Image (cartoon, rainbow, N blue to C red; front, side):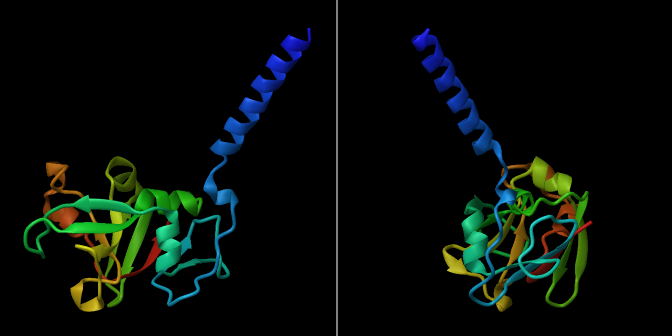
Length: 173
């Protein structure tokens, strides 16, 4: 009987650990940026750190996880290596519940992007190209990058319009 109890106890303990591991990261609060804010996310999000928005500096973006992709673009030579945060992971971290994101650039250029794009493809919000931080004159500090070389169906004018550079805000709607 004691063997059965310890086996059941071990099973229940393992089930609790699995359940806790499955709790999304959004249950955790989001720290405030310590450096210059690079990105604000607004709209249909559950996790914020600045009133009704989530503000990110580079360290906070990196804390979500670093994603990389090597792809050609219409604006660069060869196949640069881009490094940034997965847009899927970013939205999951914030508990986003919308169907689309409006990406807003420093010059107020806006594009609506279906969140389904981020579920279907490993789209990243890049902050580095070939190991160097993106500067404003190099389409930074943040640039939406589609992995078009891995998914040839993305090599369209429609997708190119979603490669927003100098991103300052994402509005989840």
